[in-house]
Length: 166
Image 1 (tube, helix red, strand yellow):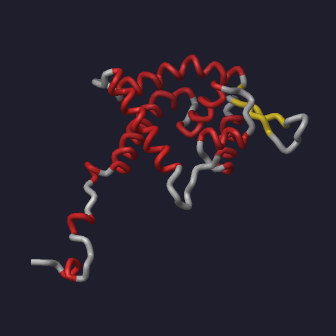
Image 2 (cartoon, rainbow, N blue to C red; image 1 turned 45 degrees about the vertical axis):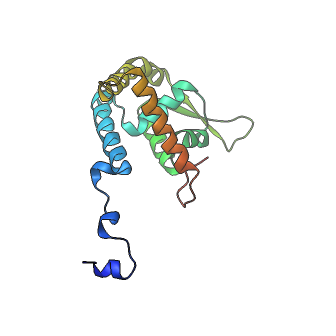
Image 3 (cartoon, rainbow, N blue to C red; image 1 turned 30 degrees about the horizontal axis):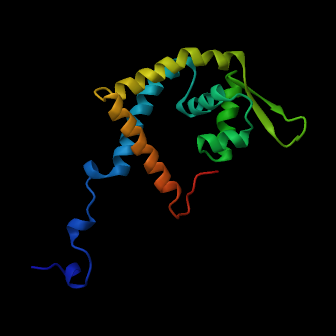
């Protein structure tokens, strides 16, 4: 027997369901939360939060980025970046210096303390990745990373109000 919604032309109830176990968004969220929780447990004793972590990673790859460049690389809004950088500066991980050619720009530079964290923390992050991908073959891992990159590309190109900063 048809439901009232089906009689009105609406989709059957089962097509409107999205069980957590088959929800890509939910699975990504839960995997990210688990990864973040394990990473935080390893880096927190060094005075680093997961919020700071991504900025440190970007600066380890290229020191001296501007605040705006960091926001774009990490995918955060500038006010969020400013808050994180203030905490990192207070912790002694970074300093900020005005650009001599353009006084509006502030470059973020690692301090010796911030640079030294790389040697300590990157192996810990790799441990988390190794644990998270236990049982993956190298081919599985390459495919998995490719799928995640595809999800990002698909959604970056999708129309919508919440595009990431460029």
